[in-house]
Length: 515
Image 1 (cartoon, rainbow, N blue to C red):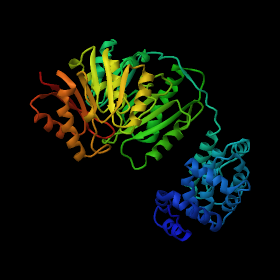
Image 2 (image 1 turned 90 degrees about the horizontal axis):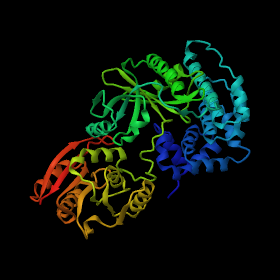
Image 3 (image 1 turned 30 degrees about the vertical axis):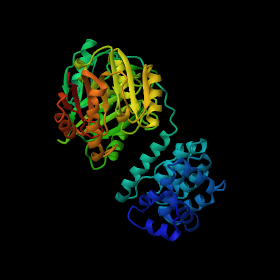
Image 4 (image 1 turned 120 degrees about the vertical axis):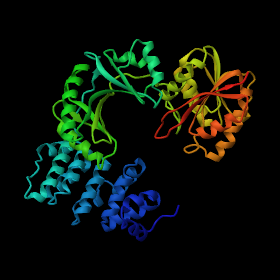
């Protein structure tokens, strides 16, 4: 790696979004950026260091370079450049060293620029300690001298509130059960609500309504729902098709949360929450900030780093908003066996839903093979559906096999995992079922590679499966797979459907081997 010179780094920092772009070469640029900051008081270099400080290794290097005297930071906080003072405050906050509180307090006392003060206040909240807490407790925001200062006053007030909140000690609450029956939305893989419907019927719960990716139920015993495995998350509807104006959102949310949270938990408030805004909006962060400003009080505290509930705001294309509450105090240990995962691996709820979609074609006591087992999720969920005679996973990657074995042990699944190229794997005894999350061709593999792999795997199905055996194949390459199946007379496509995963639209295919 060749380090950048000061001149090279300075030139790149002058470009639009220079500090952000320079961060792409953080290692090569760091020494020059540090020199620009410490020796030349370069504001953009300081902004770059703020980005670097989000990473532990860089944060430790910056702290070491600053030393105990923190001279470079003190000089930047006292600079004649307001932007440098602002970025220096941000850097101090990122370092989170309570010993920096006195210099930040002094800088705040002397600061004459409104737009710099919010960063100093937030830095005091971030560094923590008794001195910072005491300074924030007595700090008052001066009123606006004219209309031009009103926006800066609001930002200063918001920063002060956020900084004080850093010292708020939030009690952990215990969920004690619902005080009455509530409507609840269970979020499922798209187009696979039928799987969840079957599970709900088995526990005596009938949905009130449903959409392509969710079912709504009304229950009081919420814990009973965790007997079902085909849903991702559980949401309490607050309001539907309401105004997206923050004041209206906050009104609906406050009415529900202030009554609901104390009723279903042991202990007193405040309750820490976070806000998640989904959907298209020019500035989702601004919406969240405006809603939190209306919600926060004695009972509710917007605490993104210490929350027990999530207020979810879903912005619809028709200009309305749907509001939901998600509780993190509910004990959902359905998928706690997944102690490790690989990129692009299947979510356990998706695996459960796909298997239940195919349930009528599966049987108890089956011998099951997963030739692309990854971290073992699909195979483990198959074992939880019905009793099986054996579960065998094959994967070419040693890392995947290691994770799969750990996950299976945590799930108490009697599964065997073999590190091998699936196309070289020979079945000493044929299997009844094959399940596979095949490479999608974008996140893993390529279309050209898949053309060869899929054809070879389909040719192997009669070697791996008993006559009449079933293969459940999950893939984005639905056109390719259907074409290849049609070309093989000993294979029959029984059924197929489409679903959704991470913005992609994979298909689920059930293929039978001819007798």
